[in-house]
Image 1 (cartoon, rainbow, N blue to C red):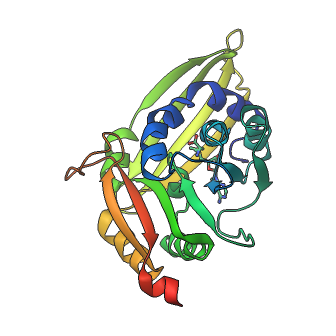
Image 2: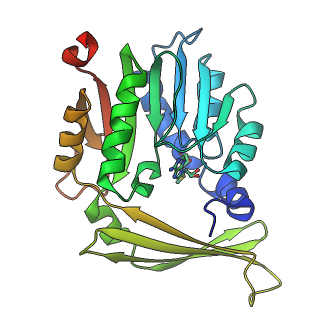
Image 3: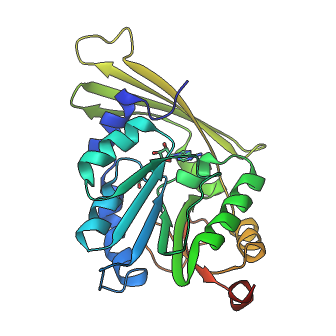
Length: 247
Ligand SMILES: C[S@@+](CC[C@H](N)C(=O)[O-])C[C@H]1O[C@@H](n2cnc3c(N)ncnc32)[C@H](O)[C@@H]1O
């Protein structure tokens, strides 16, 4: 079952663009320097390019990477100035470093193997300029436990999308079956996708970042303030350690 196929990518473009809007003022202040210009910004798992559009408008040289060709087709419309690349976040390779690297809105929760997440952090550290910042967010175990145990409906242009989610506390995995329906046909869905996310806690993520040579500050991913004991999402702001820069 392909993820972010044509049908869901079209719905995602309209219904989930708000996250970039929520994060952009924070990112512009904490990651950007307000100068734009030739500075480079890599947005991993860029989806439909909503964040990329803002990055380009602020004058950065933006690169977006995503696995889904359909998300990238949407991103091409939303961020025409960005360079786009279809690749797996576990296997990208660029020459030179980026001043800013971002990966937001659940994207890294799709890596259900902790070893894959740890390897992505190492790869990011290698691609970060010495003064660069890496910002990402992750749903926590608690976040998935609280939010991924329901059936919800999202109206959309074509009809509606149902999201039936469940969370398995033993494995730490959330499963969401996303089905899109045309208004006039409730019987057969236009598309069905199964999304699996793993919740990640602060201690394991902090250890992975340290191993990758990254220092970090962690915030609540929704309020962008100090984290709560049961924060549903954590947002991490990282830079390279001096030891990593020396090597
Ligand atoms: C929830 S969307 C977030 C998109 C975007 N960052 C945003 O803020 O709207 C997750 C994105 O991660 C991408 N993705 C998931 N696994 C990936 C992987 N292994 N490599 C590259 N992209 C991946 C999906 O195609 C999707 O576009």
